[in-house]
Image (cartoon, rainbow, N blue to C red; front, side, top):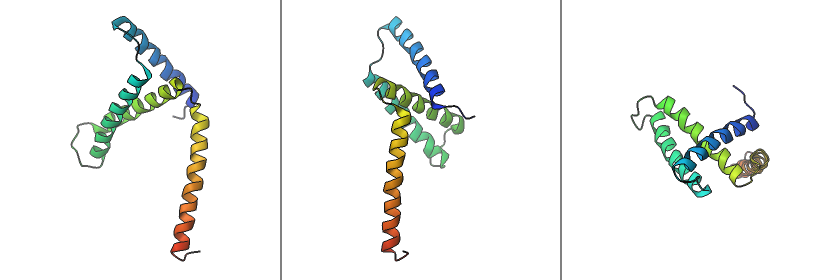
Length: 117
């Protein structure tokens, strides 16, 4: 399924709104720092599942759990970008252009060092 980033952001914000409502009822809304800590926890869970995917851990139904954690991490990234006023689409393409240029330069240096130029 090909879904535009904007649609994913809208759905992520809808879910954040539900969390905000629930959290207000039991105390208070989460801070940006708490969203970040949740993300870090999800990344830790994702790391365990990635090792299961490579056979280094035994986790039942790791594939389904991996999909869930990747989605949790994406949700957190989308929410953190919004909370920090980051245009994620623009930042992504800018960063990819920078990485592409850097890696291409690394490849050119490696080819030159290996006498492949």
